[in-house]
Structures are given as structure tokens and as C-alpha cells.
Image 1 (cartoon, rainbow, N blue to C red):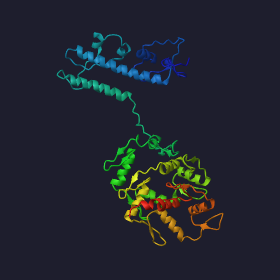
Image 2: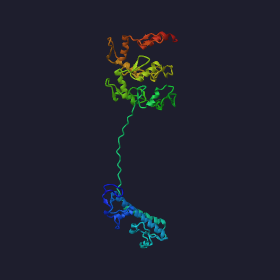
Image 3: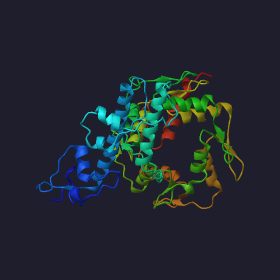
Image 4: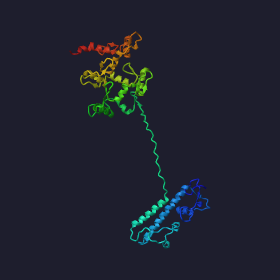
Amino acid sequence: MDLCRVCLAGGSQKDIFKLENNKTVDERSFVDVFMFCLSIEVDEDSKISTKLCTKCYDKIWSFHDFKCLALRSDVYLKSIQESNGVKNEVFLRDDDIKNEHQSVSDDSMDATVKEEPKDGFDDGDTDDEFLSVIKRIKYEYKEDTVEKKPPRKRKRAAKTPKTKSKVTKRICEECGKAVKDLKAHAIQHLPAASRKRIPCKLCDKAFSTYSARHRHTKIKHLGTKQQCPLCNKVVAHLKQHHRLMHNRDSLPYGCVSCGGRFISKSNLELHMTTHTKDYAFPCDLCDKKFNTKSRMMLHKRQVHDKEKSHLCQLCSKSFFKKYHLQIHLRSHSKEKPYACPECGKCFSTTSILKSHRLIHEEGKNHACTLCEMTFKKKSYLTIHMISHTKVKRYPCKYCGIKFGRSDHRKRHEYTAHEKNFISP
């Protein structure tokens, strides 16, 4: 059997009866050392395994040295107690180690060599000096038995490059938008009365989220807006404004059909619906259709529900969007911040400036298919097509007469019904 006698490990090569005693000064065999340490008797003629593995062999010698130290210390302490004040240094003999179960007799005490104290202490020494002797024996044992191992060099773990975790967006079933926090976004679809409102600490405005209030405080009250050096517009995020308005070629997503660039994939997908004409969201109150549910909901709120929550403080006129109120306020201040680079004429909005710049362009790229007229803008062609189709979708709210264009209906309502009621 090649099993280790101690730990039963297989493939053990060391035989207890063939091992030499090369660690002590006496002539005892390793079988006696094995018996001394573990109190296990091993017979050479026995059928039980007499093998040892290397790990158990080293542990037995380590335990042998430790047990010898304990026995030496025990004999030394007993000799101090029995000497009645005569403190002599006593060392354990080899025969005493071999027979550790026998008590120390008076003969063995007489056989020990009595010499003058080597450490220079006499009868008047204190117990602290005897304890120092014990410590010296302990440290001498450690120096002899413990092998000094070279310090291990710690290997520094290789730094793994940090990768940005992709933020997963979820689709809102109400409006179809892809948002990061669907729970916070769903609050916008609740009725205004049931929404939790967070008031601003510096003004009377209220917000649905703490982040919206923080953004409002940062922009409106702390004055963190910056002026664009190219268009002189005061914006909250100058870098983003410059990229979207003046450097659209650097945007990552491009449209294959028209070459337009967009900042996100969702904006590109929304733009692609203008090429496919896939208007899958009709209004249930009129015959209009929209490419997204959000635009359809905005149409219902603005046109059918007549929602106008932004009030002008100068003339009490109300508007659906805050941007429309800001444009309206320029009519009171006579502010026209957008100038035409060709002729220098100023305008109040960028859309009016864009329409004006078509005057300086040559050619009319939008031609009517039913007549010979051409137009510079597609919207002009759409308005012109009403004269061919004869479709009248805009009824007067006073007399019911229908018009093909909304501006014609508005002119009729003012001249025929409202002008007479205005006081001079």
C-alpha cells in the first residue's frame, strides 16, 4: 500500500523504517520519533501501510522540535519551584525526551551537571530575569527551526480599461419616445391636477421633478447662459447649440435619402417617417394624421382642447407653447435679433429669416404639376394646390362659411364679424 499513514494521500514514497534520523544528536530511529510525537506504534510486519508523504514528514519533525521545547520549559520551571530559592539552569537530557511519561526523579536531578550560573545571575535575581532566559530559549529555537523565506513580491493586478456601460432606453407606450427613466417620464402623461408639483425656491414656478427645478434655478436664477458668437443667441448649453445649429456635419447619424445629420438614432428614425409618408396616428376629432403619437397628442391639446397655459403679462394674451410667448414678447419690445447676412434686414424669428433668405436664391425648384407656376418653398406649393383641389376645410365659427385656407377664414372672421364690435 502506498497510502500515507497519517493523511492517507496516495503515491507516498517515504518508508518509516528506512528513514534516517538526521535532525537530532541522539541515535534514535525515526520509528521512535514517530512514536514520541504521535503515540502510534508501527510494526514492520504489519499489513498496514508504513509510508509517509513529504508533507506529513516535515510536519512530524516540526512537531518534534516544538514538543522538545515544551518539555524543556516544563522541566526548567519545575526545577525553579522545587529548588527553594536555589535557581540553577537545568537542561533536559536525551533520555528524558525519550521517556516523557516518566516523572522526573531525584536521581535524574542529581545526575545533572551543576555549574555556576552562565548568565551571571545569583540568588538575589528576580523572576523577570528567569523569564528572560525562557524568552532566549524560545527565540533560539525559532532561529534554528524556522527557515527564512525570501519576501514574496506582490504582483500588481493589471488595470482593466473602464468601459462605459450603455444606458438602456425603454419605449413609452403613450407617446412612443425612448427614455432612460420610464417611471419619471410617465408622470408627464398624468392629468395636471394629480401631478406632484415641486415649487421653485426663488420664484412662483413649479416643476414635476427635482432635476427640472435644478435646471431652472441654474439657468434662470444663477445666470449660466452664454451668448453664441456666431448668431448672438443666448443659450444655456453653448457647445450643444453650436453643434446642432452651426456644425451639423459632425453629428453621428445621417439620413440616406436627404443627407441630413442628427444627434441620436431616435431623431433619425423620426425623420425617416417624413420620407416614407407613414402617418400611422390619425386624430379622432379631425381627418389629420401624424407620424408619431406625441405629435398627434400635441395637435389635440393645441387645436381641439385649446390649451393655452403661457400668459403674456402685458396684453393678457395666452399661448400654447412657451416659445410662442417669447416670440410674442418681441412684438412689445420691438426686438429683432436675427439679421439677414445678404441684405442686413432684421427679423424676430429664425423661421421668418429663413423664408426671407429664399428671396436671394436663384431659381424656383418646386413646380406645380397642374399649371406652369413654380415656387421657392414647398409650403408655398402646398398652399397653391388648394386652388386646384377646391377643398375647403376651415369653417367660420360665426356663420359656418368654409374656406380653403386658415388665414382666409381668419380674415373673414375679423372683417365680417369682429371688426364692428371693436370700440373706436
